[in-house]
Length: 108
Length: 114
Image (cartoon, rainbow over all chains, first blue to last red; front, top):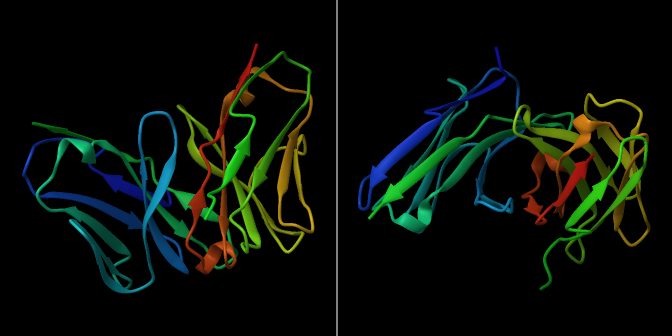
């Protein structure tokens, strides 16, 4: 079993829909990262969380430390949100462990 | 403010050769971490350097090595290349150590081993 599990693996949405991507982990962490990767490879850090909730524009990330679970929400999705979204956890030992990613396609 | 710069962006090598990749972090960042991304294994942690010291290393063979210079620029080296080393190699810089610092990624170096 992977230490970081993401669901769903693939997600298709119509423009304007509300989207949720989930991440569960089984190890002790210092922080959880949500990353976005567009075709071509570049990765952008969306959020770094150690507790609670963060919001940036149409993106919201939450984490429940007791349940070892985090969610990334996209409100009013847009085709430009199409990308791979990756959850990663920072271990206290500095090692970063990645989920397998969620491929999101938003159609007009 | 300049972002994280990785060079070269693309390179092709043959089995048995060695390769050196470079990563220039954001000015003022002292942590540089390296990652390998392949279709089969996804993203995997290679190692992290903070203030010229290797802080941690992932589960990769000794052919993978790295270093960090006093100006925080980092290099990673892969010796005796194998076909399976073909991958996108990403580095990230951070103001603090990986465990509690926001990460800023470079565009990556795409290595093809023939």
